[in-house]
Length: 115
Image (cartoon, rainbow, N blue to C red; front, side):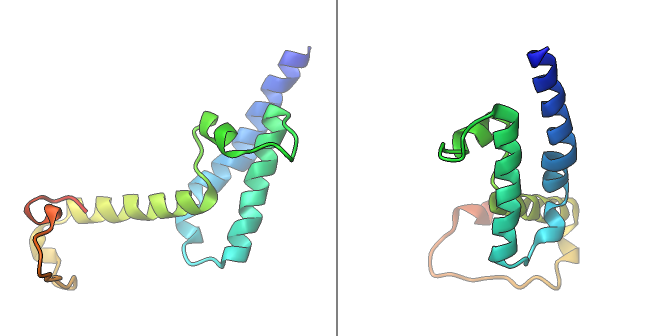
């Protein structure tokens, strides 16, 4: 009975809390750090409910076992992912609004289409 309760708890929390935080990250760009911290506390509390760990225990390893990044890392990752998808799918003639940056040294990414 306890295992069935834990499985349903995992399913509910993952569906309602963690996936919502993961899917809405692109909207959270530019949010003040105080609000990002509040969202991080929600993610930490949801993870603690799933794994029944105390508040004094570290949460990073547990988030890794759920394959979750911290909120700020998720926001940065989703932003870079959207940027890469936009840049890699457009022809080079459409980059008239993007300024070329010249440096005094050769960059590794100058000969490839990597960011």
